[in-house]
Amino acid sequence: MWQGPLVAPGGNRQSPIDIRVRKSVFDPHLKPLTPDYDPGTCSQIWNNGYSFLVEYDDTTDKSILKGGPLEDNFRLCQFHFHWGESNAWGSEHTVDRRLFPAELHMVHWNSNKYSRFEEAVMEENGLAVIGVFLKIGKRHEGLQKLVDALPAVRHKDSVVEFTRFDPACLLPANIDDYWTYAGSLTTPPLTEAVTWIIMKQHIEVSHDQLAVFRSLLFTSAEEEVQKSMVNNFRVQQPLRGRTVRSSFT
Ligand SMILES: COc1ccc(N2C[C@H](O)c3cc(S(N)(=O)=O)sc3S2(=O)=O)cc1
Ligand SMILES: [Zn+2]
Image 1 (spheres, rainbow, N blue to C red):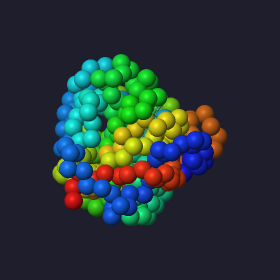
Image 2: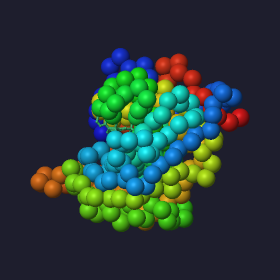
Image 3: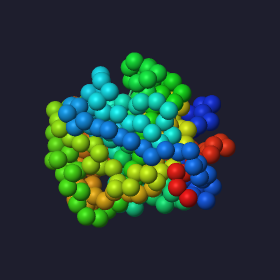
Image 4: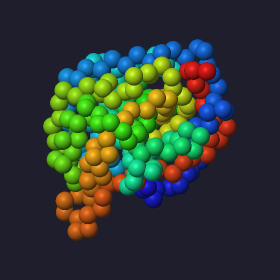
């Protein structure tokens, strides 16, 4: 895991956290999530030195997330993953201390309140991130197109065109059961701008598919020492009295 500040100075809503299921509070007012994504807005894959980001054109409301705990429209701007060097760990969030080999984050920003992502990322509740746990099992057919593109972005700062990918294929069958809480980005600038929506149901990917994630590098092509992109998760942060709500009993 990256050696950034263990706890952001003055932060009282930092992420990730352990979700204590029995301490979460059922909220009957939470609505079903209604993602509506247009695969035509998919543009590129970029290795930013923390993860690889699959980026979407967010200049229109073509790929949006509404409902759930959200009052406004949130535009999809990118999705990325966090994973371990082994299948024993890798997720950022945990459920009753249970670790998963990887975790998907789908990042959206509030297009009702802000005109640009850069603005929203600095504001309280400017972002909504869907978290989905990955387990090792059967091959994920939809993920394979992405896995095949990864060797092209092996080094930090490399970019490759990537189009027509429907991010909805990475969501679990049941998206009505989730936990939600007020948190932060888990990488710098660690801003406390995120409404987290963590899916109860995981998705399955094959061992070989996850192994390709581990072939990526934290380092750019110029650096002498190449470092494998693994364990790109942040250490867990104190709950500081926050309540995690659940959409299910
Ligand atoms: C201020 O400049 C910026 C602020 C944030 C970012 N991002 C990249 C981050 O790696 C990152 C990590 C996120 S996570 N693990 O879901 O909490 S979300 C996210 S990002 O897309 O917002 C880029 C520029
Ligand atoms: Zn993330």
